[in-house]
Image (cartoon, rainbow, N blue to C red; front, side, top):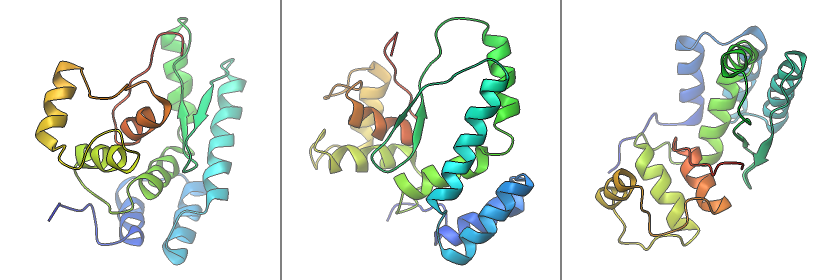
Length: 173
């Protein structure tokens, strides 16, 4: 049996309260999630909006792609002042990074699989990008060689990879 991050989402939420030092606004959302058993999409949307508004106050206007399960993927910026962008991103993530992480986990990893490769494989199988026999060893080989048996830039395949911690973007995307 695959190793799990926890026995349940509320257990993950409690661990996050205990170890990740969320901001007050995030703490309140996580406490509600512990009671409800899941992060409310409205709490995630509010966190996302706070991030977007903060970045705009710093002169950045990030673009996003929303996945079918409701998670926003921030698309790469055009070349520019990367140091300023990184600084703004860090500052603006303070009130939403934990909620973003937990919502992504909730939406893209309902089995709470600890191995991100298994998360990607599970999603890719679900959408028919790989066959049932595709293994972690296959994923490791394909990832190392950067040659997958599917188009990693296909939006849904890319969603599966990104939500499992693998970012692939085409220049100009």
